Every structure is written in C-alpha cells, then in structure tokens.
Image (cartoon, rainbow, N blue to C red; front, side, top):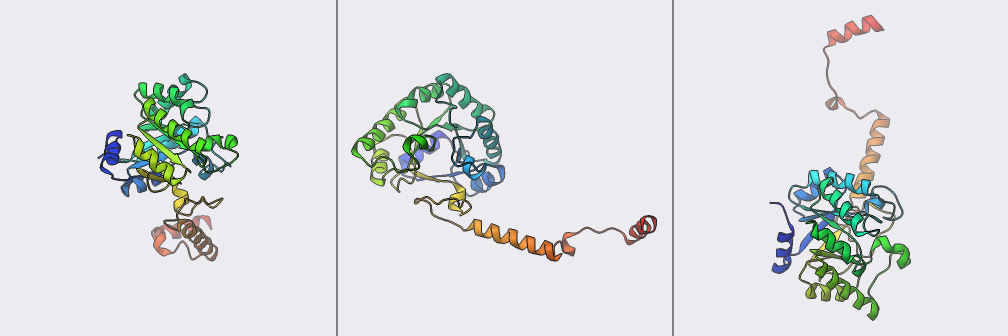
Length: 279
C-alpha cells in the first residue's frame, strides 16, 4: 500500500514514528522500500554523496529530476520527496511552482522539499495551491551554509530558538504537510513537534520528533569525508565494500577469478576447427 500525506499525518496522530532515508538511484530505492521505510527523500545531499561536491549548492534541477526519476521507479510503497535545489525556488514564486511541477511531472515524486521559514512561505503556498505537497526544512538549512558560516547547530540562543518556532508555525500555515528539523537542540525540536499539527522529521534534532531521516551513505559508513555527531553507523557497509573490491582485485590478478563455474562452454569440435583455421 502506497504511503501518502494522509498516512503520514495519521502516524503522527497515532504516535507511530515515521522512518525516512535518502536514496538517489533505483537499486537502493528498492532495498529501502523493501525494508518498509515509509518515506524516501531524494536529497540534494547527492551533491556530496554522489557527485563529489563540497556542498549542495552546485546541484541542478536536471540532477534532481534524473535521480528522482530513478528512485521513483524503485519505490513501490515509500512516499518519495524530492529536494528543490539551490535557486530553483528562491528567485521567484513562478520559478518555485514551475520547478516543483517538474519534479512531480518528470521525476514522479509525490512531494517536494524546500528550505527556509517565513522567507519562502509565499512559495510554499503557491506550490500547495498547485496541488503539490510541500515539506518544509528549518534549522540548519545546508543551502544557507555560506550565510551560517558553515554547518553549525541552530536555535541555541533565545532569539534564534523563538525564530525557528515562529517559522514552524508559518510554514504550517502556508500549507506544508511536514517539516524537517535539522541540527537544533532536542528540547526545542520536541516543543515544535508538540505545537504543530503536521509531522516533524528530525536529523540531529533528538528523539522527540515524529520521525527521523538519515543520509543512507552516512548510516552505512559509506561516506567518510566527515561524520556528523548525530550519525549512527547501522552497518559498516563501506568497509565491506572496500574488502570486496580488494578481494576482486586480488583474484583477477591471480587469475583465480573467473573460475570454471563462472564461464560458458562450447563444443570441443567447434574449437578444433577454429584452431585449424586461425592458428
């Protein structure tokens, strides 16, 4: 059964935690979907995990549409949310609706996510008026890393904490069906979760949120450029992959792979004729 905005809201109402992971391709989306994860985020984090950029800022709409379409083909039950990349919605309300529509129409996502509070409420309202569900994103918003002076915890001062609470109310009023809270104090995230009618998804925001999201490369130990404090390794897949790659290299070098069981046969008479003709 396909997860929807209604089933996700019902999970909040019932106190049933929402699970979310990132995915960027068909094969991983199938694995995540098969594990019963309710929501898949095609994050602009693909800029770092898949494309090798230092941050998310260079990611384009074409990048997001391409990867979202791959994920959507693999997700049969999971609800697919696609990130709107930098400058795809900040420039104008028109651009925001047009680009959100492309992620739905060409990427086959079920919803879009954009970063910011009061400053993007006009875009949120316009996108939702176009019948496209919007997930908001508050706290540490990676597209604002230059303004923040790096990847830093947000909402620790009284003024900033109050602003995040106010922004949470505003994005909900604008029509967002969900909000991601990233790298804010746990007690602040818990308060926001209690105040809002829409689900909150935490990443570095504590267990008081209605659900959690992680970048799958992080939780599997596959991305080693840096490890955020909030990341837990649920498997050392990165180590396992490195060992497998090394074992493959060694067996190819020693000619122990491919072995007989990995090869195909041909009639010896045919080979004899070929040898006579060409040797």
